[in-house]
Length: 179
Image (cartoon, rainbow, N blue to C red; front, side):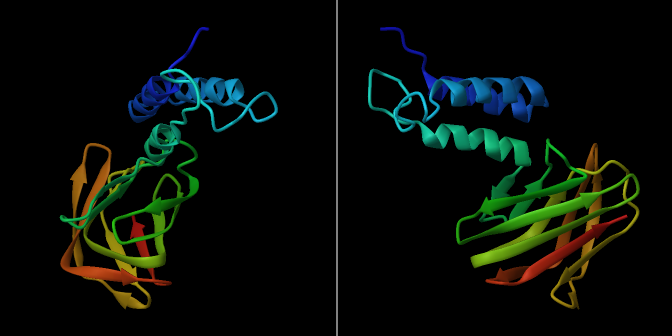
């Protein structure tokens, strides 16, 4: 009996995605998927440390890395830097007290993003984004209300710091424009 430890494979794929090795990461992820395809065997039995074991949470790391998702609840910090299709991206996110969807549309001169809390709440003080240009202006709106903020340039993008912390409640949307 030969076994491949899928948890290690998922971790390697996640790290490769985080380091910008997108194609290589997707190849590894696809190989694991194909090995445990439901048409071939029990999809809830990824062989590791013998039999009847699933490492589903390890595979979630590749998804998080593909989204470029970072979150620090106590600091009120959230960041997105999608590795796949950053020009037209949408994905779910999960935080300590809520979950929702993040979407962005990016071109050479601007990035428009939206954080939509579907359930719970999301407390924020700082947001991070990867952009294709050095921004000169940012705008943050919660519903139809302007949220005062300042931004700091980074090597690839910017960090937006809100003048005062906010809490995004269920069904509310935070809209961000970076020019």
